[in-house]
Length: 408
Image 1 (cartoon, helix red, strand yellow):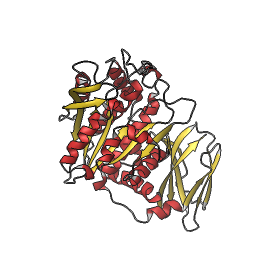
Image 2 (cartoon, rainbow, N blue to C red):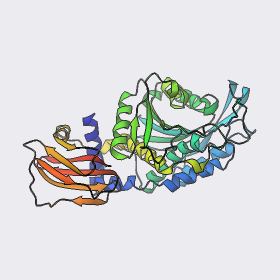
Image 3 (tube, helix red, strand yellow):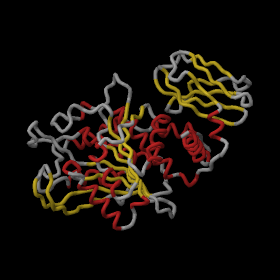
Image 4 (cartoon, one colour):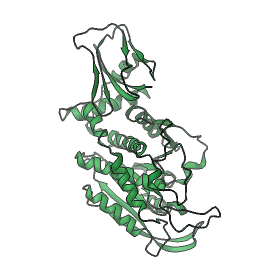
C-alpha cells in the first residue's frame, strides 16, 4: 500500500516536471473541478422530466443526444449514440422489444497499448409509487444524473488541460440500467466478442451526490473479485487527493450486483463501483431533484475518478525512484487528524530541512525558513489553519515526502 502511494506522488511530480511544473500544478488541476459545472449537467438531465427508458417510443434518444453534444463540446468528436435492440422480459416493463441508447466517446491513447479505460454512469432513471407503479415523472437527479455529471466534468478537465493519455479512455452513458443493466450487458458483450475485456478497466459512478453537510464526506467503494489492486489504489487516491473518507462495504453485499460495473465484471473486466455512503431518502421517487444534492461532494468524487485515470493513463511517462517507499515510511506525522499542534518525526539519519504546507488548490499556507537545519523531530503549530485537508511537503537530506493532514 505504501509503495503505491509513493509511486502515485512521484508519478504526478514527474509528468509535471517535464513541463517545468510541480505537484502543486497537479493540485491546481484538481482545483479546476467545479461544483457549479457538475450542477449544470445534473439540472440539464433532470429537466428531461422522465428518463425512464420505456417512457415513450423514442425512449432516451434525446438524453443520449444531449450527452453526445456535451462530450463533443470538450473535443471528443467521436462521441456517438450506440443504439441497440433488446428483446426480453424485465421486472418494470414485462415483455419488451425496442431500441435503447448508450453513449460512448473516446480520447484515443497515444501508445500502442491494448489497455483501455471506461468511465461511465447509467443515463436512465426510474420512479415508482410504494406499490411499484411507475410515476409520471422520473427526474433522477442523484440516480443517476450525478454519475453522468462526473464523467462530463472529467472530459472537460482533460480537454481544457490538453491532457493526452497513453491508453484510450472511453466515456460512457448506459441506458436501461434500472430494468436490469441492459445497456452495460450489451456493451460488455460486444467488447467480449472483440476479445477486449481482459484489457479493460471500468470506473462506475452510480448515485454520488447525496451527502449531509454535517457528516464526514464518505464514499462506498465496492470491490470485485479480480480488481483488488484497483480497489486499493482507489482507496489511496481518495485518502490523499480528496476530502472523502472511503468506506468498504461487506464483500458479501449484493449491492455490487445491481449497478453496471457488474456486467463488465462478469465479462472479465476489472471494475470498481462508487456510490454515496449516506443513501438518499428520495431514491426512485419524484423527489429525486437537483436541489437536494451536495455538488461539492460530487466534485470530490469527480477528482477521485480523474486521479485514477491520470495515474493509469499517463503512466508511460513516469520514472520511479525505488528508495522512495522506505523514505516515506521513515517519516511520521502525528497526531492526524490534528487540532492544534502536530509533530513530524524522522529517522536519525534523515534530518528534516524544510516544511511547506499547502491547501488542495496548491496555495502555500506555511513555509519554514529554508536555511534551517532541523533535528529529527519538528513541532508544528497548526492552530491558525481552518478545518479541512492540507498537503505537507517535507524536505529531508534524503529526499522529499508528501503527507496529507486533516485539521479538525
